Length: 137
Image 1 (cartoon, one colour):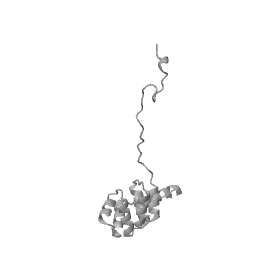
Image 2 (cartoon, helix red, strand yellow):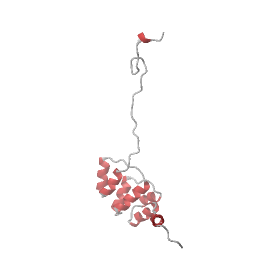
Image 3 (tube, one colour):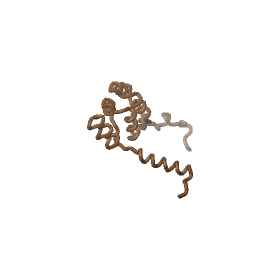
Image 4 (tube, one colour):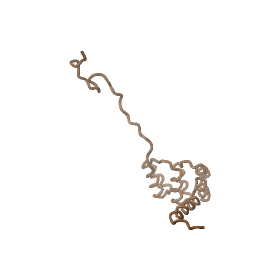
């Protein structure tokens, strides 16, 4: 059997390794259960759903490593927008700064509504008008 070119061998090896390390929410749920995380949190993770801040705090209090919490948050791919009070609550629950940094770094996808008053199209108010002298004849 002829030897594979080095680049081809490297690509094949990386595909095999990626396939071996693929992890889904169920794997993180099993890990969380091994740290005695609350059952409702484990169920949320089994389905790959977004964790609430209280659930993230529960994982931290159960002793789940910050790296594993971050990996799950990235896997779930959800967005978080935190207030200062929420950050303080996370710290009070013992959530590592690296997890909080991960939460803060998720891009904001919520578009805020911009309130604009309705436009008035009456001559002279919000609409360019040339006045009565420029009427069409």
